[in-house]
Length: 132
Image (cartoon, rainbow, N blue to C red; front, side, top):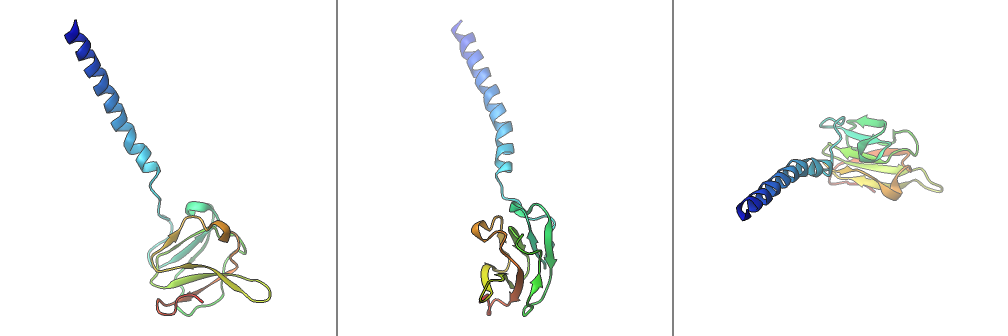
């Protein structure tokens, strides 16, 4: 009798462990930060949703020194910089425009938080220049 009970417990424990093993990778994958699939190498991309979702507002390979790269006013919430340059987000404010966000080469922002929905245009600078 004791042997059967132990065997049943061992079998039940193995079944539960197997179920947990099967479920664990699914949960782990759901928590992995996704990269913006629609933003190719060499480009900067801006989106109106968090986590690179919603509408892609901008996909640009503008060179360093470019200014006033327009984007749908006050809609940028996330972005990916797959370029070798700094990309700088600007809010058109009075009395002067203000740089509100910076992306170093190869960086991503899944949610701009308080900087969301404030970008009016971008400018691009080299690594040595960076953003103002």
